[in-house]
Image 1 (cartoon, helix red, strand yellow):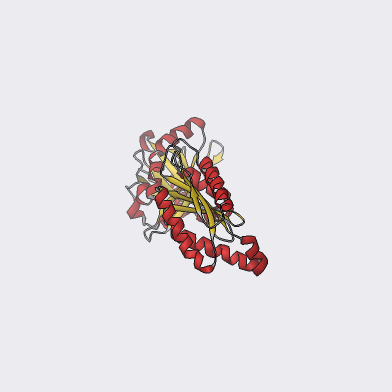
Image 2 (image 1 turned 90 degrees about the vertical axis):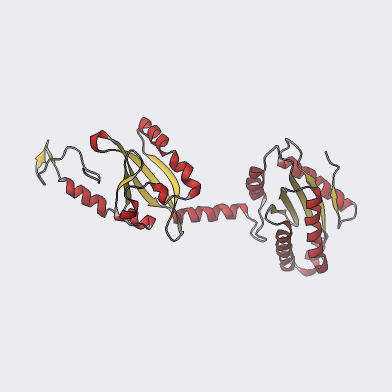
Length: 305
């Protein structure tokens, strides 16, 4: 039984004419498969490898003996296993549309190195007309790293490393369910920052903003998100938090910054049931302006809803 791709309709004569065409023996196609620079793998109807070429072994960091008779789950990233499990349905849809199936998955090499791969899957007729699958794998790790870098830059404030407005919208809003009531949003504005810039210069002002952002990250912990909203204004989003927890974080930040002469005005509020997080932000922003009007260097919240 041939394990590698073969060309249907071949006779046993190399270089002979058949139906007006030059044909090549099967073993040449097996050699082409084995030596192809494109990583390729052939799987049977159960999704188990029946042939892999050297390029595929190099990509996944495993010998052919470690792959034969096993499925791609042996080197697929755990988070991508559900996608792997849907391959049969994807192949059925691709066959119906007469198009190859293309998916992006992560392969994990034995040294725990992660490689992003673009898989192109096409149906392949195995022995006794069995429905096999031929996969061509293209390493796209470098492309993904560039894309991720561009995306990260588009969501990050370059000066402080905090999220920018787009980053807050993409991250904070997407991870907070509209029905949750355990998320606090705080809007902070540094007091007299324009005066500080006028007295000490923009370079000193930039250093102050970077230092404030660093201290804020330390105070809000892993469940907090920090965004620079513009100028000297910041937004803190605290998940799994109530008002008292938020106040503790803000007081810790005030204690960390006051010795250097930096104070801030803050408004904070708890997200309400069925409320979009942007509405929570608008309410916190209004509370921050109340703190400003009340004399600055203070934290104000609203009454529980």
